[in-house]
Length: 423
Image 1 (tube, rainbow, N blue to C red):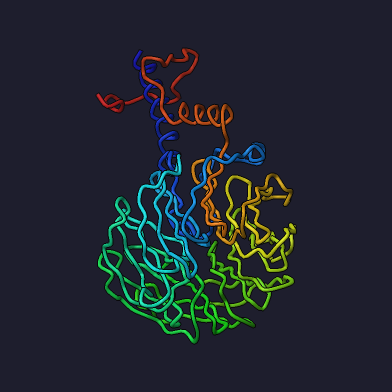
Image 2: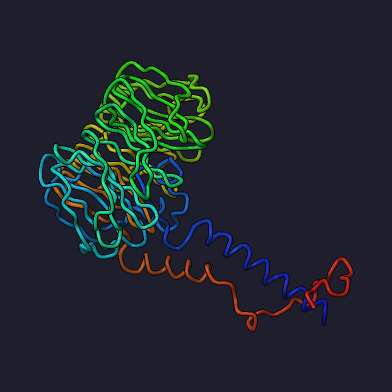
C-alpha cells in the first residue's frame, strides 16, 4: 500500500506542476499592457480562445464613442481597457470595462492623445501634445487621478515601462528615461530630429527610431549610445526585438533586420511605399504594413517574402499576432484578421473611419480604435465562447485527491528508502 500511496502522490504532484506551471506562464487574464506588449514583439503567445478556426465568427461585443478620433492603441490590464483619443480635438484618456465597454473614468489631458498608454503597477503612463500640455503623464489606473507629469515637447511616442523606468520619445528629439514612481528625470538622449517611434527595451538596451533617419541602441541604465544605424528616411516605425535581432521600418520603404548587439545589417526588404507601420514578430515571421496598402509576412531570418495581403488603404496600423492569427487595421476603415501562416483572409469588420490604431488581443477579445471616434471590442458570442471557457476552467484546476484512483498494474522501479515519501 505504501507503493500505491507514493504513486498517487507522484501523479498528483505531476498534475499540479504541469497545470499550475502553465497557469503561471499564461494566467487566466492575460494582459496587453503596452504598445509592444511586455515581450516587445506585439505577440500574445497566451491567447487560447481565438484561433484560425473560429475567428471568422467574431462579433461586435461593444463599442464606445469618445470625443475625438482614436489613433491611440489600447492597453488591456485587469479587466480594463485604457486608450486615448483626440487629434487637435478634445483629448482624453479613457478607462473602459473590458467586458461591457462601460466607462469607468476619463481624464482630459490635452487636445491630442495619440500615443498608446502603458500600464504597470496600477499606474497608467501616456504622452500628450499641443502646448501648454506637452507632457508625459502618470495616472492612477483605478481612478484616473494625476500622480505626476513631466514637461516635454509634443509626444506621439508610446511609452515603454520596464524595471521601474518610463522610456518615451518626444518631438524635441529627446528620448526620456523617467522614474516610473516619481517622474524624476533619470537621463535623456538627444537625436537629430523628432522622435515619433515608440521605444522597445530588451536585455538592458533601449531601441528607438528618429526623424534623423537613424535607429538608435542606448544603454537602458545610462542612456549611453551603443550604436546607431542610418536608413534612407525618417524612422517613425517602432522597433520589435526578438532572438537577438531588431526589426524596424523606415519611410524609405524598407524593412530592416539588424543585429541587436552590434547594429550590423542582416537583411532588408523593399516594400512599395513608406513604412510607418511597426513590426510584430512571432514564430519566426515578421509582420509589417506599408503605405502601398499591403501587410507583409517575412521570414525573420532571411527577409524572404512569405506572403502579402492587399487592403484598400494605407497600412499604418501595427499588426498584432495571437494563436495563429494576425490582426491589423487599414485606412480603408477595416480591421482584418488573417491566417498568420498563409495570409488568407479569415474575417474583417468595417468601421466608420480609418483604422490607424493598432489592435490588442487579450482573453479572447480584439480591441482597437478608429478615426470614427469609437473604441471597438470583438469576441466570440454565445455558445462557442462558453464551451471554450468551460474547457479552460476545467483544465486550470487539479483534481481533488478523493477522485483519484490508483492503477494497480503500475510498479515502482526503485525501492523507496524510509522517509522519502515525507513521513
